Image 1 (tube, helix red, strand yellow):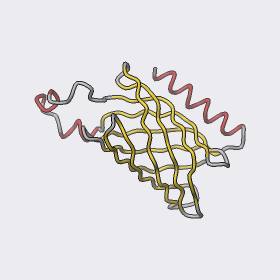
Image 2 (cartoon, one colour):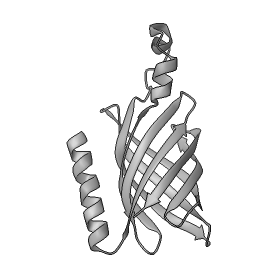
Image 3 (cartoon, helix red, strand yellow):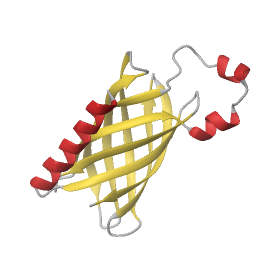
Image 4 (tube, one colour):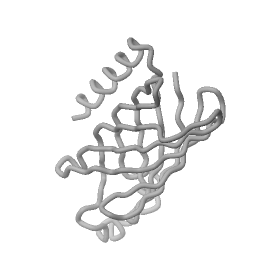
Length: 154
């Protein structure tokens, strides 16, 4: 599945570059009720603010370090999400010179067996011309999530 993800990301970057789109890479953290997740997303954005790409997310490494105790790992719910990967789609709601607001939907597979759709609203603040800081709220399994991250456009 990781080979498929890399193929999809490569295709998205090549198509984006070929069509004069902007390639976008994003590293983000997502806080859910169960824990903190870290992810990476790669895609492209059209001049109309439509973004399409792939993502890969897993349980945060810091969470693994702080929960070395085997008993703390066993109290995790059965549906605990270790890996989440798939495609994402974003549409610009509004924008200005220094920020934009997007509706984002990630669709993919969790733990290699379950299908998930996670909608969110993300606010991007332009720190530099090609660098943006991201904060947003979303929903996963009918529970709220909080996202923070940084993106770079090429």
